[in-house]
Amino acid sequence: MADVILKNINKIYPNGVQAVFDFNLDIKHGEFIVFAGPSGCGKSTTLRMVAGLEEISSGELYIDGKECSTLSPKDRDIAMVFQNYALYAHMTVYHNMAFSLVLRKEKAEIIHERVMEAAKILGLVPYLNRKPKQLSGGQRQRVALGRAIVRNPKVFLLDEPLSNLDAKLRGVMRKELSTLHSKLGTTFIYVTHDQIEALTLADRIVVMKDGYIQQVATPKDIFDYPDNIFVATFIGTPPMNLYEGVYEEGYFVTGNSKIYVGEDNIKLLDQYGYNGKTVIMASRPEYVYVDDAHLAEYEKSSFTFDVDYSELLGSHTLVYGEFEGHRVIIKRPFDQTIKTKTAKAAFDPAKLLFFDKETTNRIKDGSDK
Image (cartoon, rainbow, N blue to C red; front, side, top):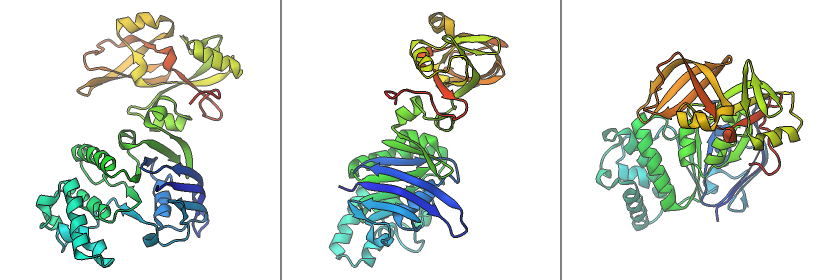
């Protein structure tokens, strides 16, 4: 069972800059874990420490129960796929995939068996005699994956492997990676700044900012229950709507508008003494409505806003506007267009979240996610 455990991992460079702070994470065998965050958040540095390409300043790393903090990369039984394919231009696809096994002096029949098995999984059998320059970007990325697969590692490490591909091909490769993970049943640790990749691929997402873990949860829990404002605005396209105002006796008051917050939020905000205090209210664009049925259902949580413009994106429409000095984005079915300068919308009070203005953390009780 190739569990990966990181305990109090820190990375401090010789110039004193600290890139990763007190990183703690238990990864179960066979999980697909995604490290997500903006550039410079420490996600790739953490992955490289797991790989042994970066020295761990302090803390402990366990792979399959073995302490690996000071082991060389070759002794960790991991395989890494990089952003650039790093293929040998003068070698065929077959020999690129076989090269690491040749270096290990494996028997020829074992090398052939593993290369052919990986090629079948990745759909590369017709291309085994081609050179990398004769392949598309997606095919080259599959060769890089195949080179890792033939080693039968306990853990796959993938550092933004799709970032060099165009949008359509990234979508195809996301599906292929998900299928590959299901077939192999091996632990995957994947780094990306693309939150779409994180949401579609991960069993759990580790959101990072400035070297710190912000939240570790399933994609659905991170989408519906972000721990803080950073996670709320980083995960989700478009990001969460945020509004600053005062909570007063069951209503969120901002400007001249009063929004009913729902029974559960009333209990929560009253319990923690937020009555009369400034809070941040948040809603996903998916949970703001402009159709007549929802406007009637959520009348007490309705509001009027100024319409700026709409974007028709095929399956849905994004409506952009302003509500009491705050940006509002509404994600609706493609046929729900708004042609007036002002319009009425309504929040689903059960989907509203509230954040402490000072800490930016979500207000929740012990039973919440």
